[in-house]
Length: 418
Image 1 (cartoon, helix red, strand yellow):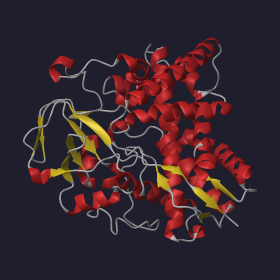
Image 2 (cartoon, one colour; image 1 turned 120 degrees about the horizontal axis):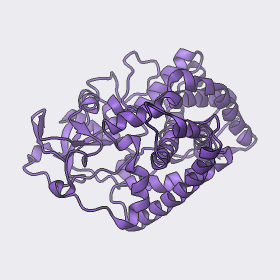
Image 3 (tube, helix red, strand yellow; image 1 turned 90 degrees about the vertical axis):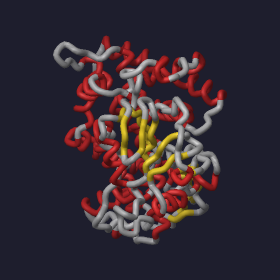
Image 4 (cartoon, one colour; image 1 turned 90 degrees about the horizontal axis):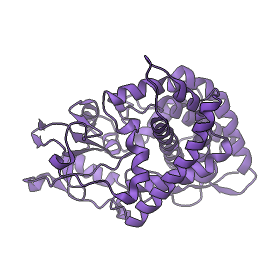
């Protein structure tokens, strides 16, 4: 996900519409929900001083704006850098920028439509459902690997490897490459931190270059000898004579690998934490396919893996009394929207049996997460198998979240059983 930043200062914001919270303050990123509660009690549409742009925390607004075609993930298709006052790309992040140049997540129609059409078939529900037996086997292999121990970091031993291996295998990369893919991905994701340092930029760029070198070699092999995998599918898909270039395939593969595990890892960790802290007997949460699915949706709502998604205004416009200029950024606060008390009864309560369940954790509109069907299956299997095998699972220390506000996930999750 590209780190979109406000290009020009926003002027004449009334004092009463402004709010302040430092995304790098541990008190904030360990519990952003206290900030959200204050927003919902006063004005969920506000100007966030630290980010320098307008943000929306209400469920209705976030859901609507995700679908509003007056906003987009890219801006240079409708305006020049000079017009926007946008600086030239940084030479020391050239490799990182190249990985995002053809990213499905950052394109707008018609480029987005073309790319998504060529990739989408692999991620439809009926196709990924065929992966369920493999996900069940892999999940139990992970549990087999630590069940004999007294305690374990569930993020490292369980939450992280499962989606990384599955998406690697789906794309056509060996399962044993997953740890290296995770390492590259984690270094690249650091670019989305608030106030990213020059050193972090350099490290993310090195990781991007290494990631691309690895994929270029694999792509060259697949062009010579295609296989039954997503990489070969992307290289050989033909839509009215239109095929993806190597750079487009590479950007898409990196996006799928990064996004294909990041949100699932965080939802697995956050979800297990939510279940254990709720005191609800796990046996009541996974007794049927329907209840398992409802539990996963509540985990996605209650402690979302992604808390802000940004958009550019593609034109001068007015929204709900706010005047926005072309190029202005808005922040859509997914985690806050999921806790909107005007949409959810007892919004701050973890309730897998609620009848008003919904969430915007996978986004909406044309950028709705292409991997959502796969993520849902991975989460359903991971939760149900984990608590079936280890029904006495318990926390052994207070979980702490990573210092990456956008990506809301745990540093580690220490648990024991028996």
